[in-house]
Length: 132
Image (cartoon, rainbow, N blue to C red; front, side):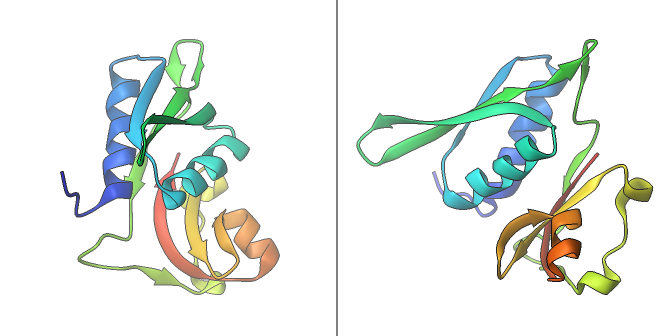
């Protein structure tokens, strides 16, 4: 099955799994998705993720979701840059999400990173999603 927005599909799978109070969710694997999940893990929004091979050439990512006192760690996760409308931002113009409580995930020339890491590296790029 062909997807027009694979990253948006993964974010929706995470959102739906947390609403259903599931401990894990599964999404097709790609390097971009793994990079975004690595940022989510570093920032403390998910517990862990692992890549599994179903059969030759077909990999999936198993994502272990994080809860605190029964409430999901991710309150809101939204795609910003979509296939029909790409959103780019200079680092000086990147607003803080929920006054710095949330993060934006950017795709920069130095790799996929959170807005705090991008500010430290002084690089801008495509705003992939926002997480709170």
